[in-house]
Length: 257
Ligand code: ADP
Ligand code: MG
Image (cartoon, rainbow, N blue to C red; front, top):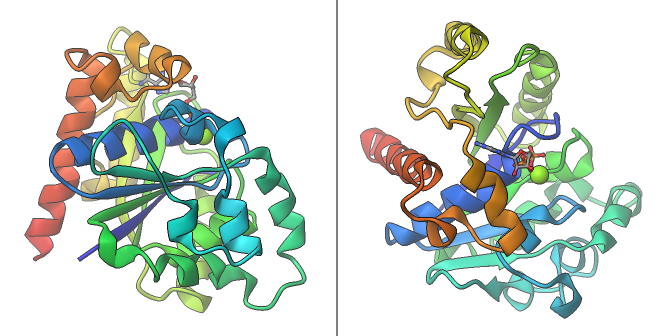
């Protein structure tokens, strides 16, 4: 059974893309078949996994707007079992172009229905907004993974995200669940990080992953080499923690049955 997970938080720079790429690579290297969907016009997941945007024939824009079959937009990566539907800057137009179309919120869901049987996990890297692309992602998803950066205003803006999730649950996707809350960019040298962890745990309780992602230079270097941490530096702390997170994600599913 395939699980579709949207990685969402309308704040930029909280670790959505880093988590999508490296959780995807970690799940794949643990034997799972994974499809990454880049639905952010910035296309950082696309370049971060080593796809040259100039070589992309069809991207997620074509799937959403031009009814291109998702299989025809899927590319392989250097990691076996890890595929991607890339994004290019073309996608920037989709927010506006989707507005007048019929059933605009369910376009991604309908497309992914054509390929979900091929994968164990589909991870959707959302843009830093709560617009139509994020709503499409939440509508297509079984669950949402929320990365939260360990910083002073960590919880700020989360009520908007939770409100959007509730609206999608009410009108578009009644079975949408919260997969988990992931604390990112933790810095053990400051008290602030520890305070933020406590605050987030108070709010989200057992939804918070035990795995906390620390600040790790190797994680920030890997994308500029077009690699996930799993191939860029498999011995790094960054690789270790994302492999741990992948285990938690797999286990939580087994626990549910
Ligand atoms: P988002 O997709 O939410 O905008 P990114 O994943 O692109 O966030 O992360 C923002 C920036 O922080 C990027 O430059 C990324 O390389 C860096 N980064 C993300 N996670 C870590 C981490 N754990 N340690 C160090 N740098 C990180
Ligand atoms: Mg991003």
